[in-house]
Length: 351
Image 1 (tube, helix red, strand yellow):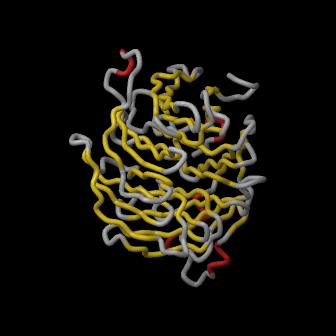
Image 2 (cartoon, rainbow, N blue to C red):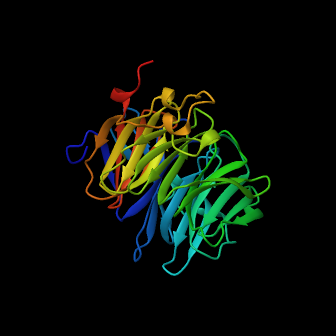
Image 3 (cartoon, rainbow, N blue to C red):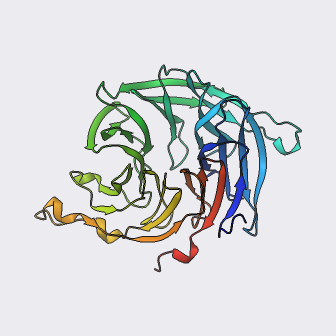
């Protein structure tokens, strides 16, 4: 425990922005996180929650050559993950593998699997399909979206297709639809854009300013959550996306990230630059199918369904991850390198 918080704390040596649930680890509740130091050798930490749930243990510490701006664990192999990194002058993206016997090595080194080297601009993120084994990857830079074929056994990655967001759009991140392996959403300065990966063409968009984070609801199709700078959190039904079906207030400063719970429908986490993590419950009834004659505007609700606010941070919170193994547990990461594990069991909806 740290600082009087109800959560379990762990301190990284340097600043950091990204943390990922190790979904493929079915034996332990574990997370991967990476540091963001311009001058020092950066690190990837493999963290595991103790069996009693009272301690966060560093199971593996690995050197990483550059600043880590994005990190995502492979959903079907717990030793594989991706990073987006910066040398200070340029950006790169790569797939890495944790050595098999890392616990027995004095100084275990990450094993390079593949380099996603087709980008020329600032790379923002690498996406894995969250719903099962898939040999495809998505990467995005500010102007382009790439679909890759990944072969881990041969340590290679090949571009299958790509598309440009257009001169008027600058991409910043995205999410892969867990219900549809061919659908991906990308955030930008003025919109959320949707691609069909079969044709690699844009099929729809939502015009919104400064969307910082986006996530699909894994329990219900067509439902998307967006986090926006100053206008909070919006719940969208993509079948009728002219207006959100629900609005949540968000944060007192920018709302930076949003994550839907993998098991409990309607449970949402958000993080912001106000040094807080908020837990929301957006009831399923708020996004139920409306009758055809109902005007779009009448389906929208602005309600305050804040279950709890976690405020024991001293810096902006950029990293959020639910545990897939214990879906009442989440990890958060503030920019000063502080990881906090919390349990939301007291706030779970009663069935």
